[in-house]
Image (cartoon, rainbow, N blue to C red):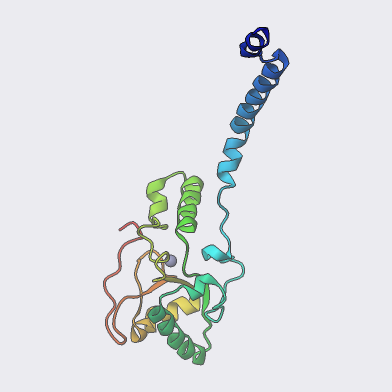
Length: 191
Ligand SMILES: [Zn+2]
């Protein structure tokens, strides 16, 4: 009986254990508070798998191992290939500065521009939302250098390729039938 009574009595948790638990809880709270902001900004860094292209090292349409090229719409890609071959005969080279982009990359580009310019309205004139961007669906490419842009503005419609935003002479989409007429340009990516 005496043994049973002794067993039933709850053993008190040693004070030192409570102290350690409290210290751990406080440390965890401090760590989360201190590291939250850096963790948020480190959450996304665009890479090749997002279609990111280094501006200083544009790629060619032949870089089909990169998602920026391989995830372009097939018809857009074929039209660009045909245009590229004819442009080459005129001594013009197509550099691709951006092709397909992941949604995360597009959002990151928009966020970066808003932070840089301090205005969402201004940023939206040049960077579409992930929902609105034709890069995200693989239906747009950005072309460089200037002579390639001018060549495509002059001859792109032969292949169905059109500049679609008045403020982006580098941005082309398949927007008409080959040999057709390009639709009127939108003023900007926000329009
Ligand atoms: Zn573009």
